[in-house]
Image (cartoon, rainbow, N blue to C red):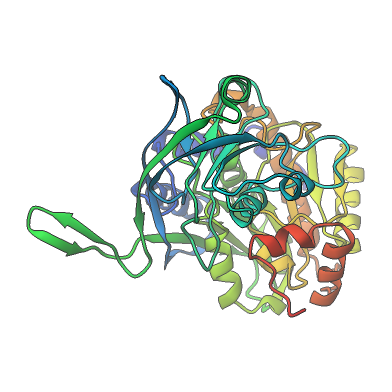
Length: 453
């Protein structure tokens, strides 16, 4: 019965798929590269032995990076546009707001200014502030430009989308700068007028008009797609295993989230050989357009019967460190399942019982569906190398991918057992936890609060 463990620990299926994904190049939502990555993942799931493997397309508001710059006095400082920034040029005084905590925004006059904030929070902050929350504060306080300064050293400007579901393109131009450029801007130009320029192309869902030599032409809407596959018995109830195939266009997207999709393929390969062990259907979904607002998972969550989902194991941020960290969102049954697997293998697994409202589990968990966000442990604040040029393959190890694939495969089998039931939660209790854990303010501010108050 344990032969499968040796098979996974000597398998090159997942790592080979990871190499193929990073070699695609640009996997930005709606791009040809994202489509190629989805097709590669579809083909890998076919090869694994899964059934009903398919792509399900959906419309997405596309955005293409062109160029960006910061000019201060006679200097040009390196930066990159944040996805879904509007294409715009503004000149205004720079205000360095440090960490950009809510009280910092309230206490500072930002009307007509370009504001710069760090990508981390201090130790004394009671919660992490997402980039989009800081951007929203800047817009509300009247800023005309937004500069997002990486706290990770190494000359690495960070990326990450702005905008909301209702308004996909943000209201003010936004760029990312490295820790070093941010320090230089704060030291030399705080309070002085600088010029911020973003050049980008926006491709609305209903099509985009562009000027060409023949006049104005109408293009087709931008498409993304989710990859679906299944294994196990044909039960109404299912365990959902998910990842996302898209990545930011500035890097290979190895950790975020090529590794998650590679582990998904490895799990599918292992379970195809253990299909008789599955007592509940297992559905695999590799989502598109996660990095621009969880579009693929939200599309699917709105269309499917969420009550038939027994549990979700979402893979986003795995393989970066040897120890798994499972955010269990207050579901005691998921905490027990993780403890069972850790005990079975005498292998450490960190569990975090609090809510984690970022990544593709959330469009389901927010309505009470039991969900795990599987990633690697980290003592650092933020994403580390992810969302930078440095998110590359050589920072990951095949040994870690194999070890975590073994643990996660058995976790999925455990959750698929008929005698294992994780009770769904009332959405009201999820909303109450968001309030109690200090997360509600940020979700409301970014326009993502789904509940009736």
